Amino acid sequence: MAPSMHTNYPVPHVNQAPVDAQPRKLRAFLHLASAGVMISGFQALQDVAAGKVMAPQYGGFLQYLTIIGLLVTVIFMIMSASQDMLPSVNVFQPIRRILLLFALPIEVVISTIYWGIVLTKPDLMFPPMPASAKGGAEPSSSGDASLLFRIPLWMDISMHLLPAVALVIHFFTLEKRYNPPASTLGAPLLAASFGAFYAFWVEHCAKINGRFPYPFLNLMGGEERAVFYIFSVMLALGAFFILNFIHR
Image (tube, rainbow, N blue to C red; front, side):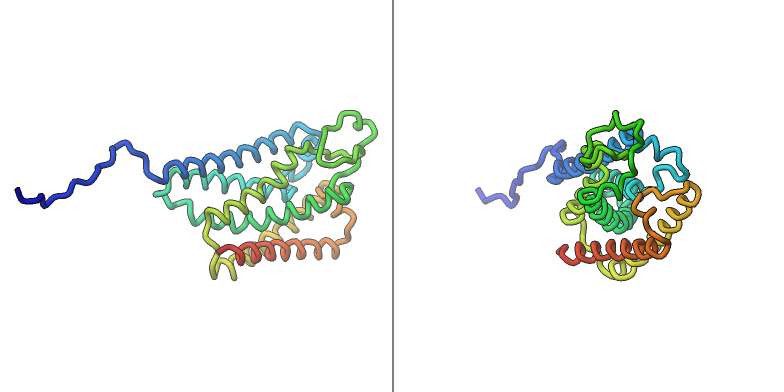
């Protein structure tokens, strides 16, 4: 009998999951878990002494660069999880890339400045605690018992470390590097625009509240604060350029 002209190939079951289904589910879980921890940290902040002082002020929590960065990072993580589960829907991709371009350097700057101050001169980050309130302070990342804005360590990590770490890992494992014009024009314009906006915003809030949200700003004159704002923008740009350069 003549050999068959047809070759039988194995036919996959119709309910077989795509090869990439499990990695996508894992990525979505990690994105949502990161966002969940950040949200939990912010919610818990509202129940400690720091949160109860921040909330009634003009500008509330949004006076703080930490909270602005946290909000953008949470939105980015949720959008990334949506992209993981719906890879064929590309509507979020351009928005995600812009959010990452904004949040990545901002979170690196927040972590660098915050932990640098907290671990060396915590009194520049946290205002003094009134004598009447010293009995009920929470365990925190700061060992100075005379501080008011003492934040529990897990909360500190969820807002001042996890966002930067999660974004850096995401960038190097799941994203392409930024190419011109995003890297050469978009990043500087975004950093400068937001830096100018935040400087105006925090100065405006300070005029109404009578003090700046971060104690070290209260120790600076107007020109010194202007230099600090410019330095922070340059630090953010430097962080972006370094991370983008080593991303291959």
